[in-house]
Amino acid sequence: MPWDRTFIFCTVLLVYTVSQVVGSEEKQDDGLCADLRNTTWQEYRQRQTKLQVRYLLMTRENVDCPQRFHQESFTTKTSHFNASRPSKVIIHGYRALGSKPLWVKELAKAFLVAQDVNVLVVDWIYGASFAYNLVVESYKEVALQISVLINQLQNHGCKLQSFHLIGVSLGAHVAGFVGTLFEGKLGRITGLDPAGPLFKGADTYDRLDPSDAQFVEAIHTDTDYFGISIPVGHVDFYLNGGKDQAGCARSRFPSMYGYVICDHMRALHVYMSALNASCPLVGIPCSTYEDFLKGNCVTCEVFQGACPRIGLSENSGINVSPIPREQKIFLLTTSSAPFCAHHILVKLEVSVLDKSAEVEVTLMTGKLGTQLQLRLQTDTTVYRSVVAHPAALCELDSIKIKNTGVRLYRQGDVHVKSVCVSEVPRFRNKKPVCVNNFNVRRNAPWSHDFVQVRPAAGRPPGRGKTAPRCECPPGASGRGGGRPAAGRRSGGAGAR
Ligand SMILES: [Ca+2]
Image (cartoon, rainbow, N blue to C red):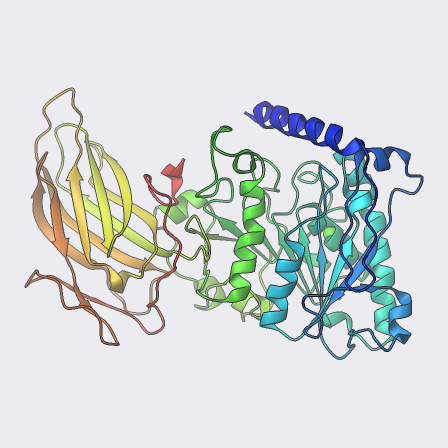
């Protein structure tokens, strides 16, 4: 229901602008630490020059105190810019209400913790605010101005290869056009949920695409509203299918943020989390999300076995040459930072049923449970589904199956020929862990404990004497952290 969102969006805009029109004035930098600007509807209407692109510089020497950065900075001794370091250029997107993006410093700091770089933040709030169609008209002018700066930096010894542009939403297409102006010679562009409205049908010249830099990656989290649905990079990560994100409200009432831009901004938050590198965010190449969820894509053979991961690894960890273009990569996440989930493929094979039935499969690790609802049909006996679990396969304590049944008629037992779990991507020679041949009665949940075999000293083994062993492959252990969305299957087609 796009109109619902549009209505709320306009209401927020109206309330905010009315409150801002009264008595606002531009705050000046305090002379020591620079900041991005805010603007107001009143200023927007009165201003003669609508586009005023400015830059902030953050380095490890001034993490908490950004400097203004301009042409004179090259000759200023107090500038922390160092041409021998690589540079990250952060480009924000559309600002509906004219407010400065609060996430910018957090993103810059995450880069500075990870790498010794110059972080240049592009402030184009004045051009990016209010009427979206007018903002879209000016994004190429912003790109042009950024290209002038990069040219100047080149004259001071910076190499095009050493630039990494990070664009959020519309900022991704600004980055793309900067890349076009340098004929694809910039090192890297990262598009964080690149904007969709007015760009989906655009020519590659006008939007982010793989020809804009030596390596282009995108993270998609809101392809059905504010984000673009088509692949725009060498690799395109579609989180939870790319449309809707776990933990973002689907109703307008619990949270305005959740309803309007939570999905769209998730790309940024997941990327910042990846920079902290507390856990891997690894995806699987697949042609469609449905195929991925059915477990039809379980390897990264197209990349010679190395699965792409979100973060700062060179070429997202891909080392094939030439790098494939517009590769769709799918991964499931949890609902909160650090967002990492383990992809567990559940395969259930049952005997032929007389009537359709419903079962609920639950994977348990400690108190963390992941549920999968399956509707069993009379003409199908094998069901496959990939779910997001916050712990690795080797950390599964138990699997439970409940015959939730249909109340309208008496449903008999479900005979399970086998239930198998395996981790995706599948590790070499790693076979699924299976439990075979049992009945699941209505009102009598079935459960099975796994024997845990961990590399380090772990918990005591499970109770079942004949339980299959569940071993951790090297580097696969360690929990993702964030929990799956409560009360529903975490990730997957049925998530909402
Ligand atoms: Ca382009």
